[in-house]
Length: 108
Image 1 (cartoon, one colour):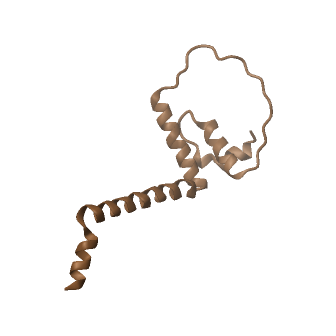
Image 2: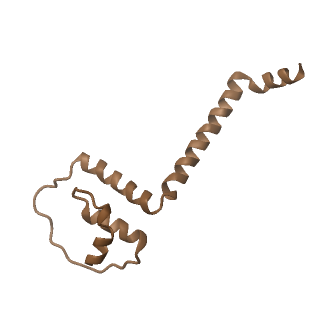
Image 3: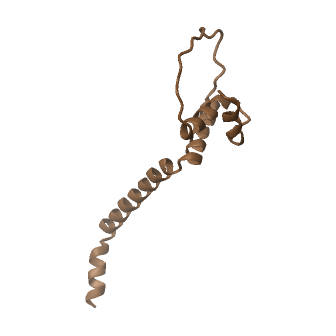
């Protein structure tokens, strides 16, 4: 990873263990990237990842997505809220016979 790429996204870097993830997410959102093969050795010891890390990682991914492409989050969320509102409206109309009440009021 090049230094100028890291410096471009330095303001996004958390004070946690997700430095590599943040840089990768930020750079793939804006920069054309390529992959190359690398070899690794098997990890020794037990993993130090805890449930709290999964929560922090999820928040980090959402933060980076919202920063670079907010519509990927807000359009589905808005659509779900609009759908919930329409379902609630239909439920209220059926439960309270609102259409019948409106027709009685307009006939008076």
